[in-house]
Image 1 (cartoon, rainbow, N blue to C red):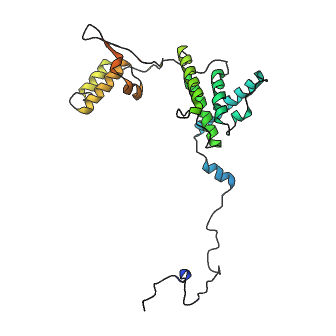
Image 2 (cartoon, rainbow, N blue to C red):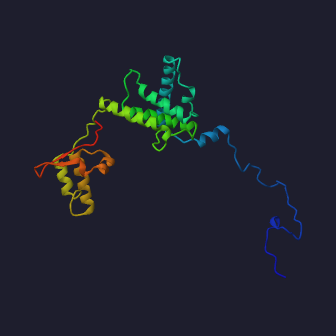
Image 3 (cartoon, helix red, strand yellow):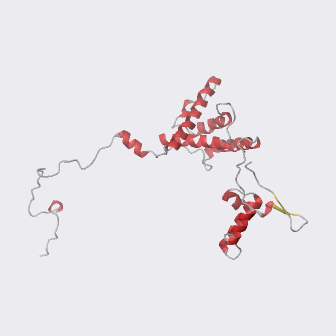
Length: 245
């Protein structure tokens, strides 16, 4: 007869002897093993944590949107903006329509147009605020969602209009690299044509210097079609595709 496996009596399906299980707590710990959590604390932990500055920015953006909502309805009592638009449960169709109106009408306290960067901050802050309240709130920035095609087109046109009017197009006065500093880059080997990395740095540096490229995206989009060779073999004309300023 094979030996019976050493099975804990509590889990043995066919115990040979019934084992009495003591339920006495005498001499055992009486403290609770598991803690308790309130609904409020659980809800707070489930939310995405923000820094104080980010939270402040989100509330400012939402306050701007709500203020516009109330002012718009005072001006248009016969065709008011639905209250659903300023709630976290707003539908995509309503959001797509009324964000376009908001984009065209929003102003600062002096009644002046916001620059593109501020409008971007307002929209981003509002989206963060709404998603804190409702994680499934639609992302109106998504270019893959056809429900927001009108909003995307309006946003692009508003930005183009503002930039063409030189609103928010102030140039940042960044210090230029002097000829002495450029010589140092060559002397120290940071720029060189003897190694792949040095050559790559040369291409990056001189493309930025000669073509006024800003950011990696403009470097990646630089194309031969932007260069026009003149009769002088040593001279080319560069055509910039777009400008931020």
